[in-house]
Image (cartoon, rainbow over the protein chains, first blue to last red):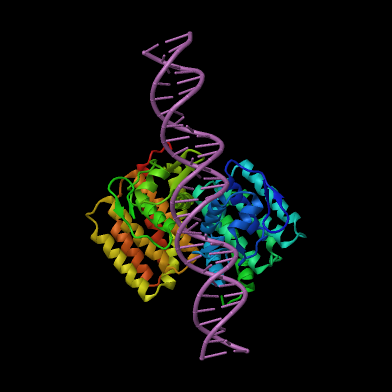
Length: 225
Length: 225
DNA sequence: CTCAGGAATATTGTATACAATATCCATATG
DNA sequence: CATATGGATATTGTATACAATATTCCTGAG
């Protein structure tokens, strides 16, 4: 099976269900910024590139639409979502609470394996300091994902994933990674508090981190939207 | 077009898209407890009852699966989700934060129209005190929904809707409304704090309400799961 | 009588065909 | 020359056909 979003065909492993493969492929393409916000996605074209019929394509697109990554208009197709400045503010306001809760729970519930994964994820983020904003965004996303998983709360995991994806979309839209000088220190503070099992400190560190980035990113956006 | 989930055919208005009608119909059926947790949903049977093909049925089922209301196994069909006690605890832990945030934001951002809707929703809840648990569950859900909308935060609205649905599922599974004697007072306290634009009080009132119900509902569940 | 094996049935997953709506472009008219 | 109108084209929405996997139940051996 062959597939690519835009140009060169790309081989990809077919999972048990074709629609799951399409979903993961499209999701990654959007989260990595390969498809820009506002860009249109045609079912037939994508199906031809992937070598699959429209059915699994449609089902994957539908899932991504509900994830908030795509927007659909009846009989008018689907596009990568464009986020307004107000929506970005709203998203960060919620994320501050949820990331705070996630860090607090992770401080209380993380296992030895979680601790190792957290250290590894942070090391990757720090090592990629020179990379492009896409890689940095991806690794930053990954770090926050590991924290959410260390909380061992399925409901939080689902919602945090949703918010992470929306934040990734916002970052690609502003096209700036916003490498704030405090980033590394804030990440380290979160990690330390979690590993120390200091839930209140972990919560506040996570919240501060979200607030810092929210201000930077929202500032980059067109305030009219 | 004719349709029913189980027994007698039921007419329902076809919206612009068939799949949206099926989605709303199925969603209501699950949230109202017409289809019990664990119960299987067959595509062909449902399609015949609704008088539509399998395509929109499948797309609606897929959305509900991602909502967390249904669970699907490859080649084995889809069932109404059954929630474990641990998942219920996790859900309420997240809901405490999110409902708290929602109430706080609503206190700050609600409009005159929101205030009227809030009063009306609470009046309905109180008036239904004698009704069955399904009606009470539905109205309670509605009250919380109105608060979330009054917060005027789209991201919060999406996530809160997700959690509300999961809580409704949990309540139907325990099959007890758990009419705590403090319910009316707690609802009133939330409403008062919101209308007074006292964000901290609204937040704490909402959190207390969630904690109260979480303890009751989780207590009803099989702790082994 | 119990259990293993297998065919028949049923159900989901994917592909394709058909219908309806929207988009685009050419042409004509003011 | 700008704009409206009409048809041709393209794309989405729905229905149906086909393929693959799972379930069921019957049969026969131990």
